[in-house]
Image (tube, rainbow, N blue to C red):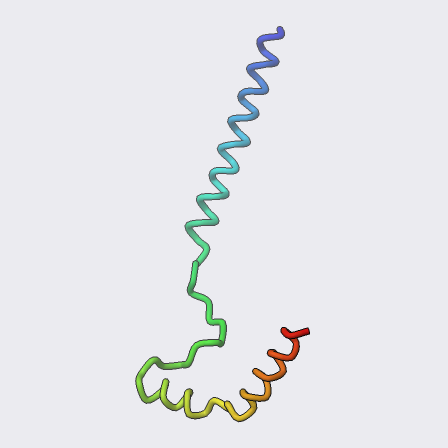
Length: 75
């Protein structure tokens, strides 16, 4: 009788592990990795597109921001 209880626990444990492995395989197989569009990349990677992005970047306040950072770090 006692041996049947231990066997039952072992069978239940194996079933739980198999179910967890099945969910893991399903999740890894059907979940796309690295395919999301996060909106941070330019729509094109051509030289003209990259150059246009660089030219449209506003760097006029960069010196002031760096000065503010230096002040905060000096405190």
